[in-house]
Each structure stands twice: as structure tokens, then as C-alpha cells.
Image (cartoon, rainbow, N blue to C red; front, side, top):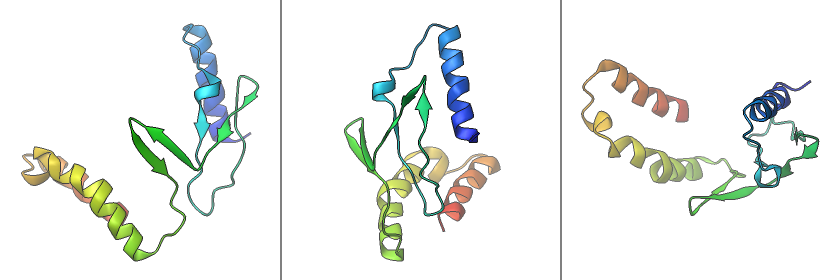
Length: 110
């Protein structure tokens, strides 16, 4: 069994134990990457809908279909870099661990 499906099953079990059930109709799957198997996932016997874009808090999130350098640089400058530069820990890190975390994000992107 797929590890992600196993995790979903554990979440469903937990939600039933705590009587905090998921609304399966509002749950969706978005696949990223070329090596993704595009598997189907199920919650409580119902198939979770697959989407290529989803609106969250007024922002439309989409999967990236074209991964050329210019697009990735544009995504980085508009989506990642502002968050890194906004908080004080980014432009004046007090602790070495904060600096290392920020650099880790930048290394991961590149």
C-alpha cells in the first residue's frame, strides 16, 4: 500500500476517534513533479478529486508545468524571496540557526 494512502487512512481513523470528521468533498489531490505516479487516493471509501489548481485564501495555487530557468527565477522572486525578506530573522538573523534555515531554503531552490 502507498505510504500516503496509509497516512490518509490514519488521519481518517484519528478523526473518527476524536469525532472531527473530514468533509471528503472539500479534499483534493494536487500532483507535483515528473516522477509522480499520479495515483488515486481515497478517504473513507470515497475517491479524492484530482486538481491542477486550487484557490486558497484568495490565491490560486497551480502545478508548474514548465520548469525552465526563467520561470523558476520568476517564481522564486515573487513567491519565496518576499517571505524570506519580510521577517526580521531574514534580514538581520540573530541566531546562526535562523541564518542556516534561510540559506537552506535558498539552496533547496537552486
